[in-house]
Image (cartoon, rainbow, N blue to C red; front, side, top):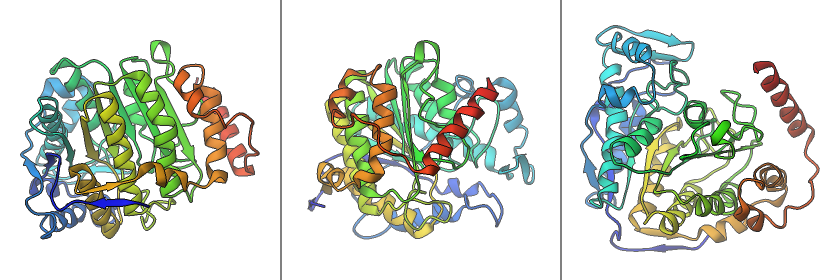
Length: 389
C-alpha cells in the first residue's frame, strides 16, 4: 500500500475525549470496559500525537434530543439507574452508578462534534466515547449500548442544524440493528453497513433494504469471516462511493467499530491498522466529493486493547492528513473470491435503486458460486425474516 507521510496535519481534526467516559463500569467479565478508554488516553499522549488535534469538550445530551430517537419510557428507565449499583437492562448490557451521566456525555459529545464540523470550525472529528450505541433500539438497550449515539446525532443534525440528507456508514463487526431500525422508513437517511454474517445480533442480511419510502436507503453487506483490508476498502470504494454520490449527503457519520481488527477477541475479520487508515481515506475522499469533507466518526466496538489503540491512531493520522493512504490501491488488492458473492448480491438487490452502482459493479454480472455456508446463512435469514413478519 502506498502511504504519503506529512510532518504536520493539514486538516483541523477534533477529538471528543474526556476521562469521564471511563466512569461507565461494566464489570470484570464484560469486554466493553473502562480500559478501552485508558489505552486511548495513552495513545493520545504519545509524542507523535500531541499537539495535532483539537479536544472537543463533551456536553450532556438534552432530553429532547434523546426523545427524537428513544421512547419516553426508555429514557425514563435509564434515568432511573442513576446512582444505583449494577443494573442489568438485558442479558448483555448493564449500568453502574455513573453510567447514566456517561451515556448522556457520549450522545451529547457526538452532537457537539457534529455542530463544530458543520459550522466549519473543524474539518472533521471523531468521538472517542463510551458506551457505544449502534445496537440500542428505540425502547431497548442491548449489545453494550445504552443510547444510540449515531442516531441521536443524525436527528440533531437534521432538527437542530437544519441539514437534510445524512449518510451513516457502519464498519463495526456487528450489524447496527438499532440504527437501521431507526431510519429504515426514512428516505432522508442512507444507512450502509458492512459486517460479519451470522454474528450478533443476527440482522443485517442482504435483502434488508428499508421499508416504505425508505426502501433502497438501507444497504447491508454481510461478509464471511476472514475478510481483511482489501476486501473492506473495496466495498467502500465500489459500493458506498457510487451510492453516496447519487444520494448526495450533506454530512457523513461513521459508526467506527474496531472489532474487525485481526486480533479482536470477539471478531473473525483480518483488518489491520493500515486497513482502518484505508477505510478512513475512502470515506474522506467520498466526503470531499459529496459534502465538503464533513465526516464525524463515533467509537463503537473494539475489544482488543492493543488493536484498538493502534487502529484509532491510524484513523486519526489519516483524518488529520498526517498520512495519506491510497485507498484505490488497497481496494485493488481485495481477494476476488471473497468479494464476488457480496458484490453480486449488492448489484442484484440494489441496482434497481442506484444507477451509479450498476456502472461501478459492471463486472459483477454473473452469479458466483456461493459457499455452502453462504447459502445456508442466506436461506436461514430469509426464513427468520418470514417468521418475524
